[in-house]
Length: 182
Image 1 (cartoon, rainbow, N blue to C red):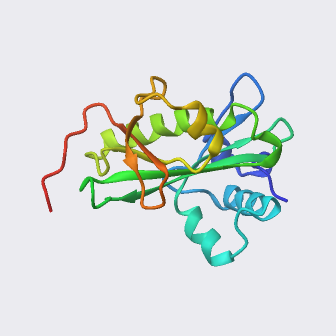
Image 2: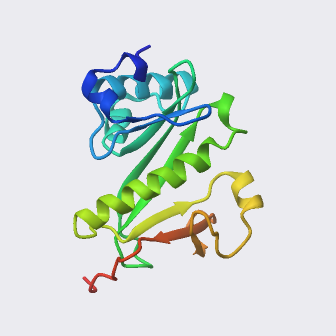
């Protein structure tokens, strides 16, 4: 398995060392080949994705991934630009997958906070192609612990339920303006 520690010098420059358990590797807006191979191996080993075509498509959406102290991928988050019909505004549909070993750690929240800041900066620097981040809460623990209508950090607000009956939350980027109706 290729890990982020095996990555090229170019990929290593995108790495952000942090105190604590994880290193966070910025993959946005395009994942490097070595990081992509490590992420695909992670998805396979954790049973997240097995289809090569689906993995290749998802790699184009990777925002960042986290590596544990051994350099193995521990979690990956992705974002896909969508315009939900009910909202009529472009948002990044955010997903994450954290390895079984790390699911009770604060990794998912760290990935969420870091990736939202990265997506917000990217949006600001590129004329706001998306005005925020959309979450569809599949995780039971998140649904139970995050019952407040407005989360403070990160600043997501409850906006209703998805077609699948899951809570939807949006973080709007500072400075973003609504797009005119299509």
